[in-house]
Image (tube, rainbow, N blue to C red; front, side, top):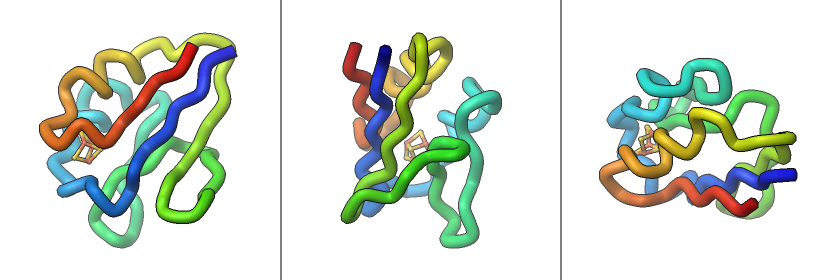
Length: 71
Ligand code: F3S
């Protein structure tokens, strides 16, 4: 299992994650991204997946490094 964690308050809404990984990422009403079907935990959004797939590319591309992938 992999866990995707986004520090949502750090996101600047550049949407690179959505462009690279629209299967798992969407833009929210606040103009920032979040993982689709994720759970809000404090300031973060968390999502568990079998494998991180393109969220790895999203994490690498994020200009403020607010996406973490734990495997
Ligand atoms: Fe935000 Fe980073 Fe995506 S800044 S929109 S989480 S690439």
